[in-house]
Figure 1 (cartoon, helix red, strand yellow):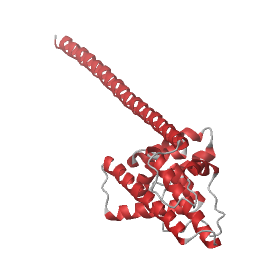
Figure 2 (tube, helix red, strand yellow):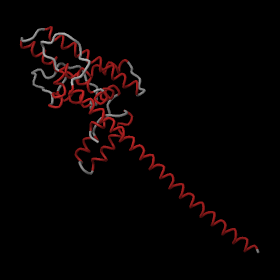
Figure 3 (cartoon, helix red, strand yellow):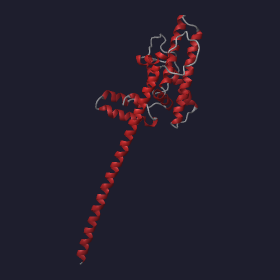
Length: 258
């Protein structure tokens, strides 16, 4: 189990997943085990955002692509090669993607029987914007679903424009990017084939993780039942020994009485 897997799953089981990962890695990779052991449990709103990386990676990719276009537009406006309208259009796409992600995160909370206070919804929105428009590390954490804290408002990446996306994120969002010349239209409802394939891969990985967790729960239940059966068998043997001893004592008493 890696750090990504630790963040995916029920929030109340986060510590158990982290501890299981540490136990698994301790013998083979002590450094990784130490790193995993220091992972922080995310607050409720951030946890909901993290689940989107598995449940709806296409939506996260759309948000990251829109934010990349907005950074490019901001730099182009500063260089005099684009207009304010270009930046406005790109910024609008970011807001639309954020609102779509907020709705998806709210759905995650609803399905998990978690309430969504107004303050939590506000933090989800702020964290989504800060992660998508912040530095490369925050964008990668948003894509992986490993954010561990609420983030504050930020601009569009590094001010000098050199805070490039990691190769992994850049490859994912490349088919979703729009050039500055595309001045109309909303978010594309259908993902390009590359992003669609990634959605399928993540869905398969999630299904495999769920099967593994189910198997682990079944093993835990079986072990508990086996221990209970052994305990009851031991108690039964002890009771039988006590009964035999009592019978022998009674026979001895009757003999002495005669």
